[in-house]
Image (tube, rainbow, N blue to C red; front, top):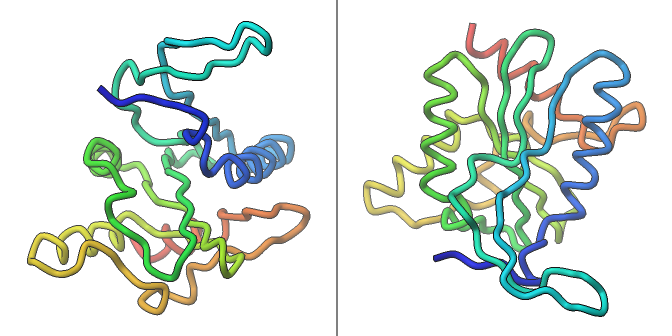
Length: 177
């Protein structure tokens, strides 16, 4: 059974930035996207600080975020990468299957990947992710490199939104029509 401990909050800075962006989107009437909490069952709690020190995941989660952008259902997961090589092990099978099923229902699924060493954010459409998964299934490496990414899908901060993913999302939608 999967467990959580203090190292389980990797990516929380990225999530804070996305949460701030999502709140700004909500205030401006551009989107309504929320963080989906991962259900955990606490095992050990530090009595002095009242903090959970050990817990296990009650069930597999889906993705980090789900919502609607001007009538378009969206779901996405936030990932961090400290090098220029992203390991596909960071994408769990149940997350991929959820995104695939979401797409089958006419929703838009994607990843937001933060390349921390470069301080760059990348919007990865589900079709691109699917291509890497299929490539991996044919015996290729279980990763992809920064150099392989589409320059059009990098996320630029704009109008006070640090993770302004609506622009690459808009490009993704146009490419599907």
